[in-house]
Image (cartoon, rainbow over all chains, first blue to last red):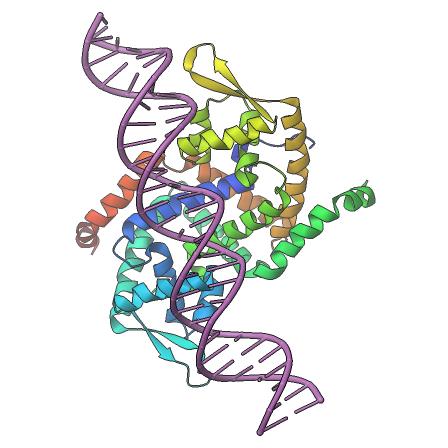
Length: 166
Length: 166
DNA sequence: GGAGATAGTCTGTCTCACAGAACATATTCT
DNA sequence: AGAATATGTTCTGTGAGACAGACTATCTCC
């Protein structure tokens, strides 16, 4: 296929479209939550274990300087606590407060409704399949660091791969 | 399920993760193209028919004021042309130039390589499935307008739906 | 012909991500 | 122990980008 496909079959376009719609819907539903969709993800991630700020930032794919004021808001709202890590006094453990737990459950329910609407065009079995594939891909995705490396390699080695292929 | 799931099974998280990685890879590969990933999508969309600027903006999900300078760059690079629409003198038709065609094909090839890497964790059949599901969802996704309406409805009618359900 | 809608552009504003530095603490090496 | 290096967090500044609003030109419908 020397000629590119239609936009509708472009992976980047589809990803963007779906993600954008998901965020847009979420923002409305999560309007009351500090940090919006990202604040919600912080709560979700803080639910399991007591991650450090940096661990959270990495898992959620946000800059660590952003995580600072994102947590500031959540702390101010009384949804999470910063506790000093007894093992490493540089680090802070992020704990969910009871209030945070309550909000998390409440918003999780609303979000489930939104996603139900969003995925409605697909059959139930397909919805599960999409969720599963995305989850698997997201967890398997290369870490930040070598992600760029791969692209660099491709960019640099295009001619070579072309030759070895042809 | 009264308690929310782990982050790894959150649809929003997975979507964000995959989309972010895709964009990051694409940006490297499409660094030479004005507008980056979005410039690429403009070229792809301009390939079929001769859409107007507004049609492009809507299809790509960008603001119409953004489309203006996005096209400025592509025109300056000689990849597309703005031609007056003979039927509607307010509108401009976006035409791909021969150079634009060449660039599009070239970058489409590189992008295919990147996506190959990105989707590598999935089996080939699963890759096709994911593409298909995403494409179907993206094309079926409600238009900008009522997207927010749905969320509003859910937010406003939460209590009601709860009662009618229980 | 007039009222309202639509395509495109321009301007200003506001948010946000990110780089860089600063500081505290950990870890490793000699 | 002391020096060198790495890591976690915060703060500051800066630049890019999104978006609302106004404006012009044109179209459509009554």
